[in-house]
Image 1 (cartoon, rainbow, N blue to C red):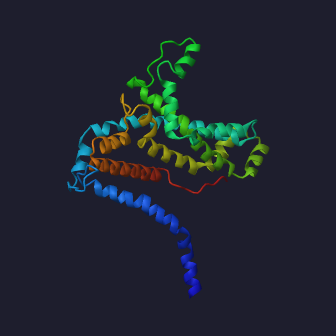
Image 2: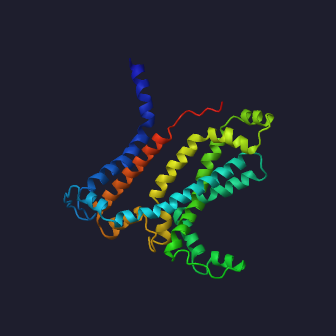
Image 3: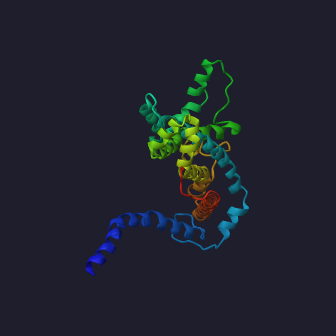
Length: 290
């Protein structure tokens, strides 16, 4: 009886530290955030006046809090380019290619950089007379736009920066999934006369279907919760404010923590609902290559 009790408790003892950290730094803050969303709290005073659903009503009725979701469309479209680029290089570098380890490092290196550092680097790249304008000047292009000052092109510049930074993460996910496919399948395909495109279509694509689905989930949630790049480079100016930036400004600039908490809860629910819909449309089926 004692041995059975010990065997039952052993898994919980190993996972206790992780569970404590998860509950302390994830579930407890989320619960507090939900509680704050029903109050009119400024984040400083000890008094929190209950306002019921007033914060949620304001979030859903004030167009200022929904127009910023249009900015997320730039990052959503850019995420498809990111997935395509990462999938292409992961497929090419999974085969025998010269200097492939070097190119793997080059592709993954941007993701290792801090987001704030990336923002400052590209801030100098896009500034008037900066690196990008200088390079374009060598090719005879003198009348360059204001990459971050023009509202029509600022979000494209910021979304391109996000693609440069996060392609490495998607690339590593695809590369690991491709390398987990048994090599015998490639050998059999080559014996049958299949070229690289046919190997990708009938072996690689079905074999990494789950990772592709995961990448789309990350693309949707990431495009809705963009923060670092636009916050560092423009601070939400010139029509580049995202929902998260507006939430931060509401909480810390205008000291309306209750309203900001309601905005954060709404964003969390939207991401969960979209993820659930996507999983229903594209179910997680077993991968078969037969």
